Length: 116
Image (cartoon, rainbow, N blue to C red; front, side, top):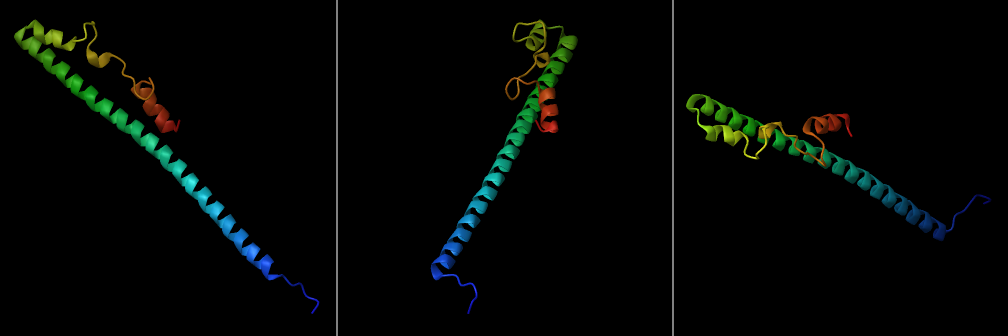
C-alpha cells in the first residue's frame, strides 16, 4: 500500500476546522441580515416621522381654514389670532418643520427615496 493515508488526529482536526468555518459563515450571514434589518428600520422610522408630520400639517391646515372661514363669517378677531398663535405674521403651517436631524420634509422624502 503505497497510497496516501491520513491519521485519525488529522481527520478530527479537519472536521473541527470545517465546523469552525461553518460557524464563521453563519455569523457573517447573521450580521449582514442584522445590518439590512437596521437599515430597513431606519427608513421605516423616517417614513413614519414624515407621515406623522404630514398628518399634523393636514390638521393644522384644516384648522387654519376653519378659522379663516369663521373669521370671514363672524368678523371676530379671535379667529384671526388663532392662526397666529405664536405671535408671528405667518400661519403655523408655513413654518419649516424639522424632520430627522433638521431636514425639511420634502428633502427628507427625496433623500429616503434616493436611498440616502
